[in-house]
Length: 86
Image (tube, rainbow, N blue to C red; front, side, top):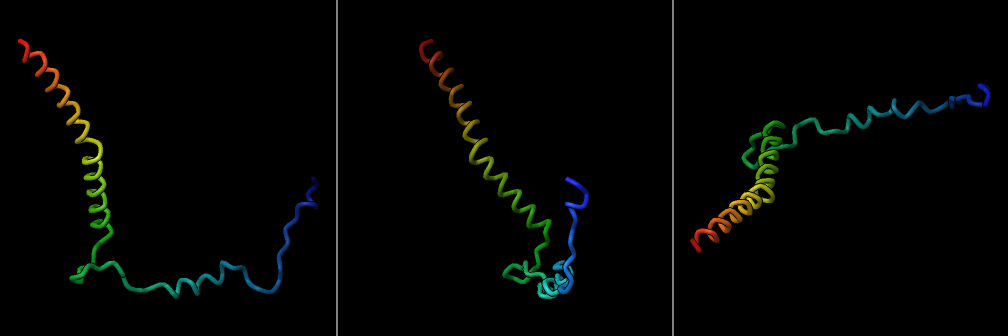
């Protein structure tokens, strides 16, 4: 393939689409829409902290606690079986 076969073309007329993006920016809301019912604005850090705590709670209740219970349940069954028959 030669250099003349791969040329780029510029169309005259309309400006490139990235120059018309200012209309999209002007239509964005200028105020913060994250407010609670009492009117207290919530920061991004507070929201992320709460979401992290919810994820940690879900991790504990779905995985960690059942495996700990399984481990201690087997230990109790093992010791109960051997100590019951003396």
